[in-house]
Length: 317
Image (tube, rainbow, N blue to C red; front, top):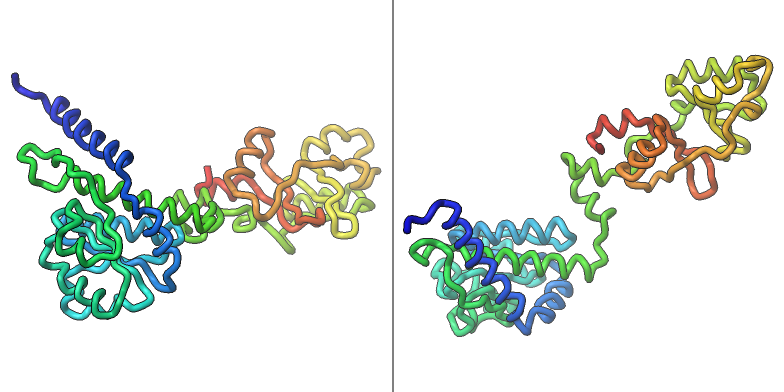
């Protein structure tokens, strides 16, 4: 019976899923020791491999670096022509080779041995040249490749990448690497916008429409018009005492011009903090149907004003 492409795809996914379950059940006993080793170095984690393993090495290094572990991928061919200088005694090296006999890794192995640089192997053959040279061997299950001829790196690269993810997540967890730290390393694009804090986009200083409780309403209206936010913040002794919105104006139309700011303001407005994630503040504004949100510090001093358009402008929604 002829297999459809969907049949082939399901067979591939089944083969790789079965191998991942084996890796889960047969997680190398030295995994904890490897994490401790990598957490304890003063330098970087150098990751290398040849061919498809090299592509996986690049991904593992990038994942480590983005989750708080300084890391760099080094191509083994370039290493043999001068880039060995990138690998120092302060570093640790992860070498990837399914067979453990990849010739192009020989110079990096020799460099690690010569300068006592910690070496971790990811391989299916712990008794290989690479496995024997390494201090720790993260052994992959001897699972079949998923390709039609059983030779192209498919299952083995999936296992290696998953093991790299496991290392990165274990290390970021042990480091206490949180969203704030993640955001500092991801300032660009939609992801960066989602990890921005209110302080990054809020208006502050002379931009703020600020009045005192005693300010007559005609002056309040002028301040609201000058600053263009449609609100005025009422402050007493530097602390936020209330806010005046278009809704407050409508509710106090009778005799409005004879009143002062303190008599018209909403006394307990919803506020946020400068270190609040912008996405959280935006969610609060959407839920309460607000266009502007005062930003206060720990002592309730007004330090900024967040407008919904600013959050949308940077792609936080």
